[in-house]
Length: 135
Ligand SMILES: [Zn+2]
Ligand SMILES: [Zn+2]
Image (cartoon, rainbow, N blue to C red):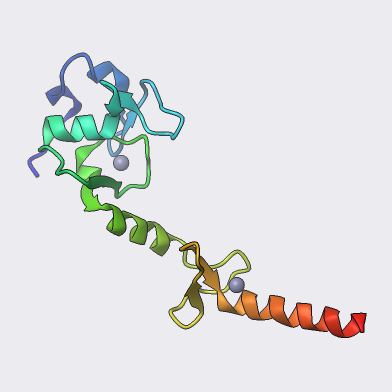
């Protein structure tokens, strides 16, 4: 992508963005979900469409820099919802007890969330021990 700058944006948007030299941090109105809001839409989508290209229907912009207030189009990549969710998954590499989410140690619960087999086995063992004591 050709280098673009905040000054390529409409003047009305420029004062709402701080260029840190890397991320462009949105300092305008922020929606309850943490995304910036511009022209009634997500600010990063508005900036991306102004400077790069329209975003295809059904695609989400993934923040490669993990700063959800960043609107730098160089840090944004249009991806499908499934791909976006898959990437979120990959960021979490360990369960809350510190077991690694390997294919062998991971299963998907009915609600679609990942669960850790090692924790599940430990819970089952604790439960059985408790039942034995109770008898
Ligand atoms: Zn960024
Ligand atoms: Zn675990």
